[in-house]
Length: 166
Image 1 (cartoon, rainbow, N blue to C red):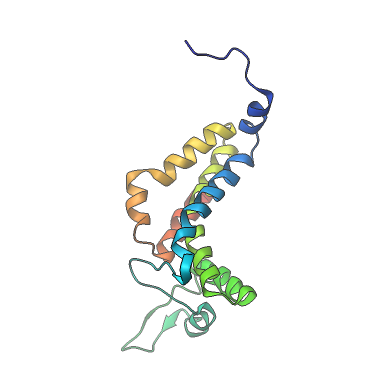
Image 2 (tube, helix red, strand yellow):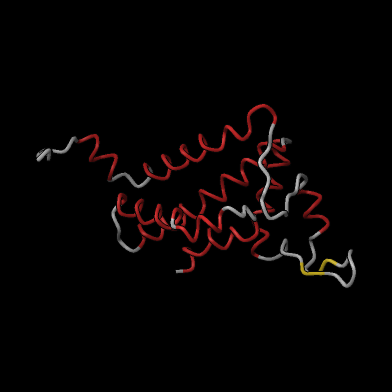
């Protein structure tokens, strides 16, 4: 009934642009996270694994086995799950700000899974709008949202890397 017979060239150009949807999602996530960092506050994880000094954490956990307590336990930092620790250490050393490092962590927890599924969808031949819908479903489905509420940085790396395995 209210169909537009001729689509706007600008709208058509935006919907077919591969970079439009990731930029929009990045802006939305940034705007959603900014209130948590106003007034000197920080956002921490729900399951623990909260680090404020990633350089010291990587220095302490640089080997596969961490034997400081009891018989010891495995360290995730040298493995693939520790790639985010390297990124956060780099951000921490470049900026010197705990808030920016924490913001980078939580931004990547929400953005990287979206980006991974978006790129996978584009790779299998989906148009940008279809890839956006697929990536949005991947990020916003009930199972994944429940998993994201833990805000555990080591588990989330698996969700971000999973689309790249295909």
